[in-house]
Every structure is written in C-alpha cells, then in structure tokens.
Amino acid sequence: MKETSKFTMVLDGMAFIAGIMVVALVLIICIEIGARYFFQRPQVWTVEVCEYLLFSIAFFGAPWLLKEGGHVNIDIFTGRLGKKKLQVMGCFSTAAGILVSAVITWTALKVALESYQTGVLLTKTISVPQYPFILIIALGYLCLLGEFVRQFLSYIKTFKEAGKWSGGGF
Image 1 (tube, rainbow, N blue to C red):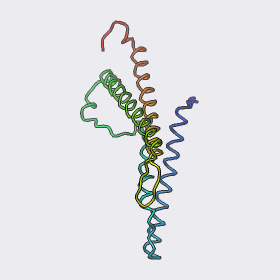
Image 2: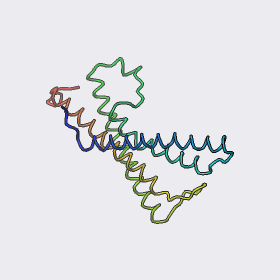
Image 3: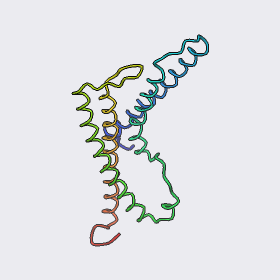
Image 4: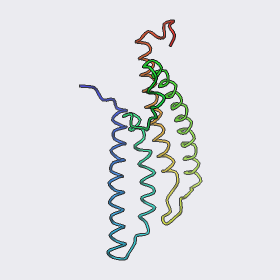
C-alpha cells in the first residue's frame, strides 16, 4: 500500500471542500429557482454567494487537479515526442509553474495584508471583506507551488536514476 503524504492529504482535503462547495452551489441555485418560480420571491443574495463559491472552487480544486494530471493538455505536439524529451519538457514546465506560483502566492499575500489593514470591502448586495478571497488565491497558489515542486523533484529523480546527470546529455 502506498503511503500518503500529509501534503497529498491537504490537497485531497481541499478538493473535498471544493466538492462540498459544488453541492452548496447546486442547493443555492435550487433554492433560488424555487423561490423565484414557485413563490415569486427571488433571493437577492444567491447570485453573489454563487459567484464567491465558484471563485473558491477554482482555487481549492486546482492543486488537486494538478496532482491528478487533470488539467487540459494539448498533445498534438507532445504526442510526437519521445519519453526523454517529454520529461525534459515536463521539467521546464514545472519549473515555470514554480516561478509563476511563487510570484502569485507572494503577491496575493501582500495584497491580502494590505486589504486587511485598510479594511477593503467587496460591496454588491452583501458587503464582505476582500482579504479572505485574496487569501484563498494565496492558498490555492501555495498548494500549486508545492505540487509543482513535487513534480519537478520527481523529474529530477527520474533523470538521476537514468544517469542523465553524470556527464551524459539529454
């Protein structure tokens, strides 16, 4: 039986929370449909709450999706490459993912702190603080960063095991 790391459990937990959010989203939409069409009393809060849920689902689910290899792949080019070249491309793409995720995580944390300190509110139908949503972005990208690092290290390990780092080329 394969041992599950704590990080994998975090990603799985975030995906589970995203799943709960999807169920909540469906229930809220059903409430809105029922209230609007059966009782002629539309609820003013449902659209906004659904927007916040959709936003959160994306950032809670993306790291798990990366772990599972579920992101969209365009294989018209990569399907023609050999295993070695695919691994080199994977190494470079995960390195790019690390860089982008690190920058977005850092920026989101900085913006969240500023938003918290200044008390910025998102005001539509409901007024809510902005910083929790920016923290969701930071959390999502921090976990993406962790998964990109894990995949990058896996590529490096594969290269080392194949002896590609000992004077040989790619």
